[in-house]
Length: 258
Ligand SMILES: [Zn+2]
Image (cartoon, protein in one colour):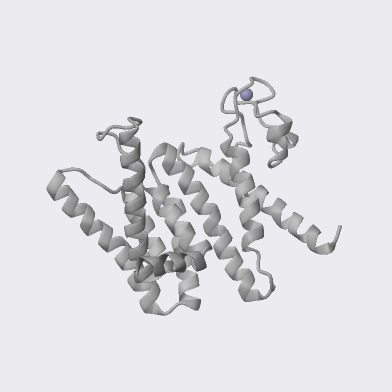
């Protein structure tokens, strides 16, 4: 095997192992279980998962998606998250390795990990844990201080909190309902620090647009009625992923909108 191929295999395995940890976060953060202890256990029978049953991707297929003791069906989300973060690790890994590109990789891959955790937690529990927003806030603050002009990250961050807060407040005055959750507003604030004021406004409009289309489709298909809500975080994350991981194709979309 060539050295390049070995390196990419190693990076892929690294991504899947981090993905395995993200699965732990998705299960434990919303349930307020310590993320390091106890060791991985089966939610069906509490059996401690042996190390060889905990190998990213491989164990899921080797166990045929079931707990070896009680037959609890392991959600497909587990291998999916491991696979997607393995692929993202390769996709984001710098082609030319310097201190700066490596730092950028750490930031972008951390973002991919946190986005994945937020996406699945919000989808199921309709919350975005503060710890995840805080982690991104620290990351983007450090990045912003080093690489971005003050008026990009500071105004982006303030606008990210302020604008949705005002909209939510107006919505509340008119309808008497709280539209956006606190976690969504904090996430907009955090993303504003990286995307800047202009990128943030694009995110707000496009995620609202995408959310409305999906929401109305679900109502039309009678999978949901107007009373129950769908979580909004996944739409913010999908649009932000597009903006951050595929900025070139996002620019093409913008040129069509103009
Ligand atoms: Zn079990």
